[in-house]
Amino acid sequence: MKLFNPTNTLQLKGNQRTMKSINELLADRYGIEVDFGSEIESSDILRKILGRGSQRHFTDKPVTISMLKTLMACAQSAPTKSDLQQYSVIVVTEKNRLIKLGKLNSGLTWPTNATVFMAWCADMRRNQKLAKLRGHKHQNNNLDTFMNGVVDAALAMQCFICAAEGIGLGCCPISQIRNDLSSVTKILSIPSGVFPIAGLALGWPKYPKPRISMRLPQDVVAHWDKYSDEGLARLVKAYDKRRHEREPIAAEKQRHVDIYGVSDFCSWSENVTRQLSLPERPGFSNFLRKHGYELE
Image (cartoon, rainbow, N blue to C red; front, side, top):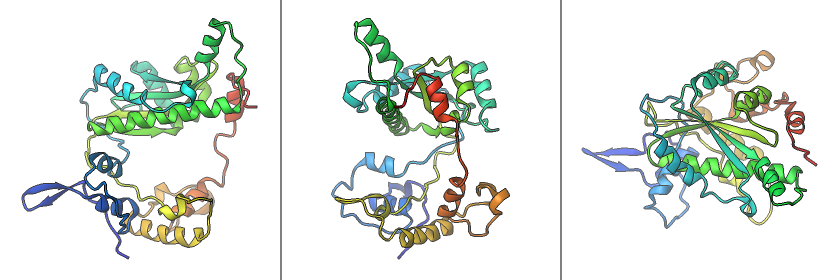
């Protein structure tokens, strides 16, 4: 089994720059040689997606309003449950609001220092208001509508990300916007029945080559015909080893070191289970209920 360390999507061949093949990009993504026998070797879209990575450092080059509107049209091209379109996005441009959001972000200033910061929201409110305008009673304030709004917003955001990265922009979704939802909803004037599922930092990347995060093997994630986690421990153990060899988790990235200490070999599975060993955002459901969601 040959391990791979990713290089740029562009390779040098003599004095010419050549695009990596799909199999080379798959090796970057999984950390080992893989060959799916794909007949879509020449797809530029696949190369863009397989070679993508989150960007957290941006130049001062502006992203124009016209560009954002075109990218938003790409986001609105995403599938949506029953054509209900239960999502909204807030593009935050006012410096004062960005400063206030930055103070909530656990000491991280780079998301709100990005060229553009967006809050992607599930939105039940709009269709509630439309039902009232049409003289109908909205009777779907429930857990299913909550889920549909979250999925709609996530699909739209991902289409926006793919389109933005396709023209050379860099993006990074931010879950920390949900750390203090009461404050965020006040800063962004988000009404009852709407809540942000994620923030998104956007801009022209300062470092064009993103870090390629090694992902779990498909045998762990993809299930054919029926769910099965047979072999999970063995497959993840091998993945932990490959990932540590390529990108060991530094001490400052290890979770809850006050409880578990710093490890010379802190594997991916060790780190994520450390994180999940303590409750995160325990007041989330209470916030949603106070903010108009019944969740029944």
